[in-house]
Amino acid sequence: MLSVDSPLLVTGNTTPSTSFTKDMSPNGSHTPGRVHVAQSARGPTIANGSTDATLSGGRTTKPHHIFLVTGPAGVGKSSVAAYLSKKLNFPYIEGDEFHPRANVEKMSNGIPLTDADRWDWLTALREESQRRIQSGSEGVVLTCSALKQKYRDVIRVAGYFDHSLLIHFIYLSAPEELLLERVRLRQNHYMGANMVHSQFEVLEPPGPNERDVISIDVSGTLNEVQEDALRKVSEILANESYSRVNE
Image 1 (cartoon, one colour):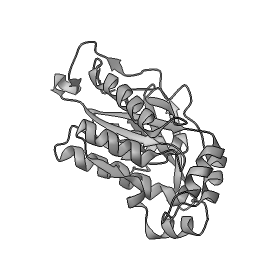
Image 2: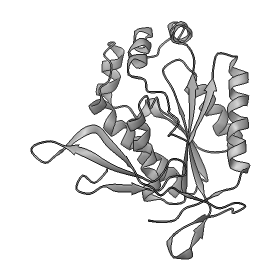
Image 3: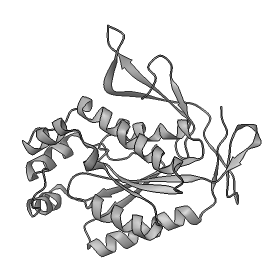
C-alpha cells in the first residue's frame, strides 16, 4: 500500500517525474481513491541504443514491462489482452477476477463503483503484476478499466518500487452506442449494458500529459484490433530502451 505520511516520487517512462500523496481525513487516515499528482520539472532520461535500465550507483538491469489494456466495458479488453499475452509469452492478469465480492455484487445490481470501491482493487492489481515480474517474467499483460487518470496513476506507482519497470497503457476506445450493443450480447457476465453509460459518465480519456498510452479505436473487427495492438506493442519492445535515474 502507499505510504500516507510522505509523498512518493515516481520516475516513470512517460510523463515528467510524478509525486503521489493521498488526501488525509480529519482522524489522520487516508481517503481511499484520492491520489494527487504533482509534476516535477525533471523527467526520465532516455538512453538511445541502451538495452538496460540504469539504476542508482551505475547498476543496470534488464527492463520489465506492464502492458495494461484499459477502456470502458465492451471494448474487448480481455480478448486483446489474451492475444497479446500469447504472442508475447507474458502472463495474463484478468482484472475482473480481482474484484472483491462486494464490488461484483454492486455491479451485478447495476450500482456503479465508487473511487473507494476501486482503490484496494487497483492496488491488488499493481501488486500482483509486481509479484509476477519478481517471479521471473519479463513482463505482464493486465486488464483493468482504469477509467480515470488517478486510477492509472495507482498502477504507475509500481515504477517507484521497481525502477527497471516500464508501464504502458493500451487504451481501447469506441462510441458508447457500439459498446452498449456489444455488452447487450454478452451472456453470464455481471457487467450489464446499463453499466456502460455509468462508465462513460466518469471516463477520463488519457490526455496529452499521459505519454505512456497507446490509443486504439476498436470499431473494426477483433482481428484488426488485436493486430494493431500487437504491432504497436512490438514497436515499443523493439525501440530503444529506457534509462532511469533516481532523483
